[in-house]
Amino acid sequence: MDLQTWTYIIVGVTFALYIGISIWSRAGSTKEFYVAGGEISPLANGMATAADWMSAASFISMAGIISFDGYDGAVYLMGWTGGYVLLALLLAPYLRKFGKFTVPDFIGERYYSNAARTVAVICALVVSFTYVAGQMRGVGLVFSKFLEVDIDTGVIIGMVIVLFYATLGGMKGITYTQVAQYCVLIFAFMVPAIFISIQMTGNPIPQLGMGGKVIGTDTYLLDKLNSLSTDLGFSVYTDGTKPMIDVFAITLALMVGTAGLPHVIVRFFTVKRVKDARKSAGYALVLIAILYTTAPAISVFAKTNLIETVNGKEYTSMPAWFTKWETTGLLAFEDKNGDGKIQYYNDNSKDAAFLAAEAAKGNKGSELTIDKDIMVLANPEIANLPNWVIALVAAGALAAALSTAAGLLLVISASVSHDIIKKMINPNISEKGELWAARIAAAVAVIIAGYFGINPPGFVAAVVALAFGLAAASLFPAIILGIFDKKMNKEGAIAGMVVGLLLMIYYMLKFKFGLFDGGKDAVAGLKEGWWFGISPEGFGTIAMIVNFAVAFTVKSFTPAPPQDVQDIVEHIRIPSGAGEATH
Image (cartoon, rainbow, N blue to C red; front, side):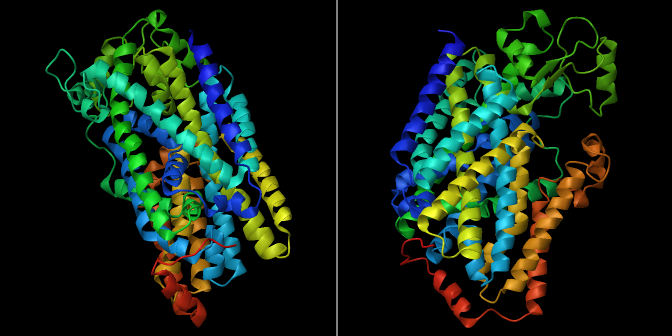
């Protein structure tokens, strides 16, 4: 059976499954729409949390970054994994005890202020829309290749699917859909990894295969990739080139940004008790680790296979997958020296002798342009795996992107319907009216998310990293201080959030988009001007520190919180005996 038929079958079956689950578990109340009625089991919630967590950035883009950046790409692994541990142990139990199931609701109540709630809503919306832009790009990318439509059409198809089960099922439908999506995405990620590990090293465990010897030789796979990289003018694959301060800043921004992500925090309210929230956090961590420990292996397999398949080979001899990826615009060949062969090397190398040697061969620059986001998707084709495996990867990538997009859209709709309409504009709105407001808000959010998916600010993981930086800069300090500093008042929290968010947005616009310096074409030349040598992906750490400093400074000149608020903070520090989430 050909690849196209396999793709239609597997993707069609999984989509039918998601829609069927949404119809079966549709929300009939605001509590079911927001927190699935608080009736989800710890294991199911752990699977749903893992699917919510492992977005298109984790499935598609993380391994692509590690493929090209090598050791430097490990910051994403460290940051996102460490962030989940931080969230599960340091924040989730206390927020669960407080009983408010949205971040703006917690901040509004803890800081006894609708102004604080409004600022938190704005922060949550900025973070969520930035994050969901990456997911919609991932959806469009998968559709463009495997269903042979352009990326814009792919994004629109994804919008329709997400709109259906997010607005119909709410958190209840999304949760059970995400359980199915976790099963699909982890199976789709692991099957090709196991196949290729056996193919290259004879070891069926990818994590061990990555460190094993290439079949039929005494050469370790990582040594082989190091050699291939240096031969092409790139740095040693297993060595890092990023300044340590930037590595630290990106890792910390991803960690604390994780702890401020509204769509992950809300998952801890879908279980009955605090004990169940802790259990589901543990299950999710184990389930997430399966993919996160496999991603570096896939990166090594994909980069090695790619170099050996294309470099120095005749363009006319390229397999069918090469031509198909070219049609998407995510892979491009330009025959600069007219010899009909593909020359792939680092033409930006600072090694003058290397560049002179390439010029002596008649080469006029690297002729292959590769989008980092295609590495996981193209990997099974490069390794010549069966068509059903290639189609399975497409279904897994869609599951990863759609599961996170749905969770984010629910946060956006809850921020509008619950935190703005119910809490500030019309406290007397009926439950039915609030439910309709939530669904309408979700529909509008899907349209806006689709726009950002069609006009993305970068490749998937870079966009998502910026969302984490925004969360670190704005929401994390307010949440952590709201739990552990009973004297933190509304003036300090609001000032910190506003300054942190605006500082992060300014830095992103300046150094990521070149808004003040001539546009995106000027971005590459702005690296020398990075503050403290820290990239936009890591600047959330600096903005977070500024947020803390502003909050403490303003607090020292303004009145302390009311005593009843201080008593609540004391109470939630003992995360036992919590009842159901309320709104």
